Length: 284
Image (cartoon, rainbow, N blue to C red; front, side):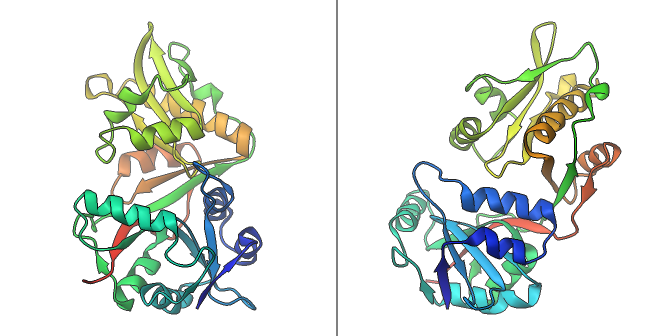
């Protein structure tokens, strides 16, 4: 049975995972968003091997090793969960109701930055893939750590600065398909900094940070590409994150070779564990 605990960070630290993986998970379990504190669960109180944390239907998770996923996902599927408030709590029910309003026929959970092995274990346990999701891609964490050191890569003709409030909402919406209304973007801007590169007062490239604290949504309009704007802005953002956190992290789709080459050239390293952002649902 998955059982609620009050000290998820201690469990995470005991797993011996890559520090970059732990960084984003710690942000999730420690952050209170819109008054909602994540609920943290483990598979074994005496010797935890899996940590599952959820805020409504958003689930982030980590395991000591991949062999521990099968039982944990079976517990989720069969709803063998001891938490307070009792399963399913109010926010999860609310998310299911909102999902039905958007056309989701079944109850489900969203595996947010989950290891591919966890998703596969969920399917093996009896969950069904959400037909609205794309199951072709995985991503990896890329990370740099240490002191800021990239300012020399910023072209002096490129003015890079922090964004102010919600000034970049409409710009950021141009580069993504999954948030046409800008709801998630606004949450990201309220939670962390945004960044913009300007030339002669014109915005030519922009980005922000995801709720997990990772770099994201960097975008240059097609007609302005291959001028070094993204490289300048990335250098500016990375140094800002290094100064703030000691880490600069991003998730890159496995097929996005251009971003991989950019990060590799900046000295980033890739964490080998493939990750997914996928919903799974209970059968009818």
